Image (cartoon, rainbow, N blue to C red; front, top):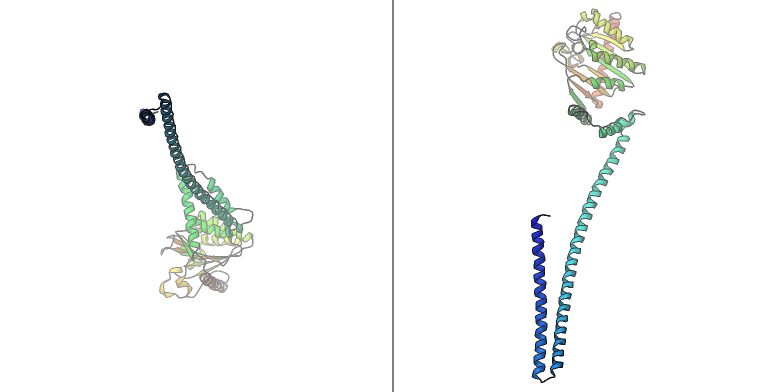
Length: 359
């Protein structure tokens, strides 16, 4: 115990002793005074000395007992009041603790209820029920709850991926979502998700690279993965059609382009080619779809994957956007049908090879 505590305890006990001693001395003094007064009155009345002494002692004793009884009652009363005050304070503390406990339990129950509702929503979400057997959403939430990153760098990587998914979902709540540059994951995931049709255009300035398809998109790792995903889509019954929009008739005799077209036809993709001088950058000399054309892919006629390329051939993809509002989808479907029919007519007119569409 600290030395100060012992000093305080000693001072408190000393004070109690002095107070108690003073009270006892006062009671004894009052008793002696009462006895003395009794003895004096008896002596003045010529009473018997023995009986006067005994009466004085009796009166002094009674006064002492009465004083002691009064003091005891006061002590008991003070003790009762003190205990009552303590009980009131304890009750207030208990009530306060109970209120805090109720609020804490209420918060915990609300958290549990929120978690239960969230889990139920996840299990019944459209994404969760879209794939049979797999628990993609609730499984992800469960794994995230138990995930402990091996190091901070990988933890930040996971957080960044989750942030990207969050941005995608927020964008999908509107009419479109944009990604800077060319997004590999969207392209392959949409191809694997297609169940009805994939209608695609591929302009020279987007997929042809700098040397007219010899070093373009279809020679890249993403292009090969995309072609494989389309082959798998054809095998599961998806109709895949593509129109190559070429900016020069020379490309029709390009061995690399012919090889790419043959590979796609062997994969089950229906292919047409059409030559539009200038491609998607023909300037004011052309009209209609040739003037406003941008490379796009329609998945199941419900999602449009639209890529915007740089002004120079082979400059790469500037941005990629997913459109899914019905008006734009219908416009793109009508545009594809128009391009497809013109390309088919041009090939028929040219004897089975790509022809030049009139500007």
